[in-house]
Image 1 (cartoon, rainbow, N blue to C red):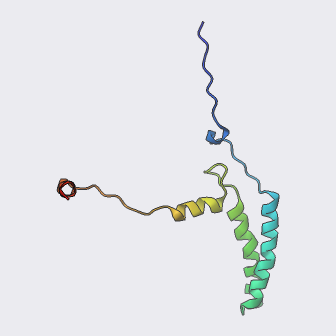
Image 2 (image 1 turned 135 degrees about the vertical axis):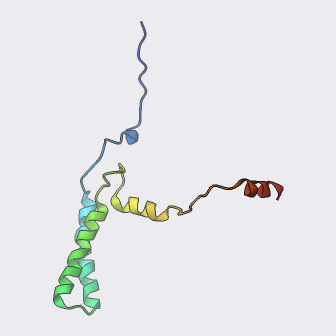
Image 3 (image 1 turned 180 degrees about the horizontal axis):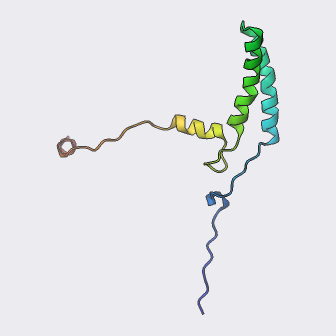
Length: 106
């Protein structure tokens, strides 16, 4: 009689497990951004209609940045964007045989 082995896998590995809700502190940050947008709009000389759009854009942008990412589990959109921005943008190319021989001699 052969028993099947059970291997325990951490929950972080399960890519199907996603959370789609904002946390309470995210809501407070979004609401606070309305005040920050209003204060900045008072400093800038903007017409009234543009000032309203400017103030309304702060919570909308923060809402999308603080949403959990659909592709990367347990990460928010701004965390994924920062990871992409910090990534090294080095393009590797294939070295020729002559270059490899020159490196060996040096």
